Image 1 (cartoon, rainbow, N blue to C red):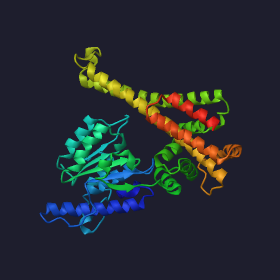
Image 2: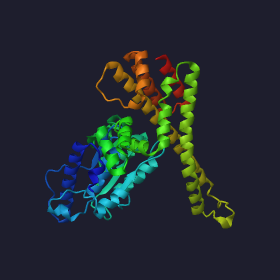
Image 3: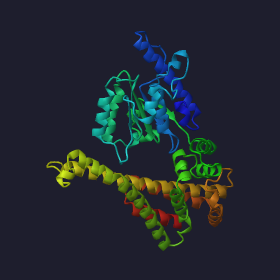
Image 4: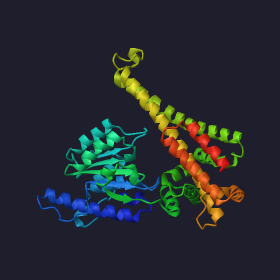
Length: 403
């Protein structure tokens, strides 16, 4: 299966990346043969993938990385790099290629230390592959200091190192970095294309696939989770009852508390699954085995404290992500209300809630609905600024009532 098959609804981007991979292959082949590299090339040392959530930014970057490392003999016969079955493609896609570093974070930011480690790696020549590839999936989470460290590496790249940066938008990346990258914009995949993937690759029944793809408006990962996880469907249903519960102050405050509590519970469940395993593994690595009554050796308390701090930051990030998902669902709800009010031909994402949508649409005009959507956006921005979650969500629910 070619590496591009996981890139849904991005034909234009795929064509650009495939052309660059062909030129990259020709460049390396010429250098290895001691020949002059081609004069014109669509390949460059730094790429920036942007697009809305669910568009497949990281998927595109990983597929491109695999195509760059492709070792299929068919390339010499005019075949496309990125066959999907050679050792270069396979190890890249499963995350074990020695010359492909994929960086993602479950924390709120990427700091200077981690970025310096990446820059040092980027200066190395490829060990076994054709390129040294660094995929930074969360480049929008670089701190200012980390972004400045990365800038120097992008300004003065090693000969066969490629940086693949991913971010929601151009504005999320330092201007001096994005000016040195080739920019590719991805779009939200069509709902029908996402539903088709869920049926063909995940074996999801067509009706459920269509529901999940429509409800998530083309976000493949969220659609897959919604289709496969009954608890995810239950959480979504609970969130989408909120617009019906903000008729008075008491309802607003109660709905806000329940929304924040649900996000905290999600973070707690993830922590229980991951934190205990991490802690035990670190204790074992530090020598706190059964023969030592579980006591840590002297001088290791700082290491354990560092792990605890990291786990705490991860719980904060998980809670924020859970809240953001709920706010995305709420935005989709009011978008559907606005579409009904304006008589738009846009497809309704929450078709299963049409009676509720119509009731709210009749109760007010488009201006009121737009104010409610703006209130949800303001809540998301407040959370990004580290406003206390309950305070931000209470302000939003009160605005939904007043709007």
